[in-house]
Image 1 (cartoon, rainbow, N blue to C red):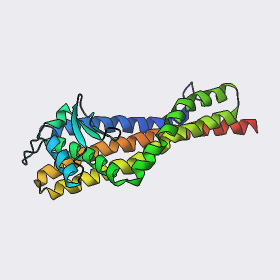
Image 2 (spheres, one colour):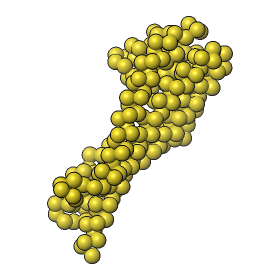
Image 3 (spheres, rainbow, N blue to C red):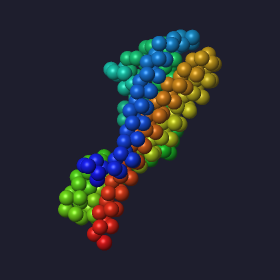
Image 4 (spheres, rainbow, N blue to C red):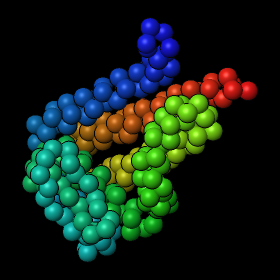
Length: 231
C-alpha cells in the first residue's frame, strides 16, 4: 500500500478496467454507426437469423423481440433467439451482423459445440465461486489466515475460467455468422460493416477476461504475500 493506494490495483487492474471501458464505448459507437447504414440486401435482423437457422435445419428455434439496445441473446433453455428493437426489424448492416451472430449460437447448441457445453457445465460452479470468493478472501485477510484467503482466490478463479471459455464461444459464433452471410452473396460493404460490428463486440469479451484475470492475479499476489509473512 502506498498512501492508501493498492499498487497492484494500479499496475494490474486499472489498465484492464480502462481497456474494458474503451471496449464498451467502442462497441456502442460502432453499433450506432453501422445502425445508420442500410443494407443493400433489404434483409432485416430477423430475416438474417431465420435464414441461417433454416439453412441448418433449425426450424424449431424461435425468434422473438426483446426491449433494449444490444440486449440480443440466444437462450438455450427455451431454444429462442431474442433480438433487440434495434436489430429485429431493422435492415441495417449492424442488425444483420448481430442477428447472424446469435443464430451462430443456436447452431453451436444444436451441433454440441464443445466450448459451449463446457461453459454451460461450469455455470453453477462459477455462480458459487463468485458468491463466495470475496467473503472468503476478506475473511482470510481479517483473520490473518492466508489459507482461507487463497481459497477465496481459487473460488474467484472460477469466474475467470468462465470468461476464458466464453472467448472461443463468441469468436466461433461470429465466424459462423460471417461464413453464412458470405454465402448469401451480400454486398462487400455490408459484409465489412457486419464484420466491424462483430469485431467490436468480440473485444468486450476480451476486455472482460482481462479484467477478471487482472483481479485474480491481484488477489493471488496479496494472499501470497500474506502467506510469506506468516512463514
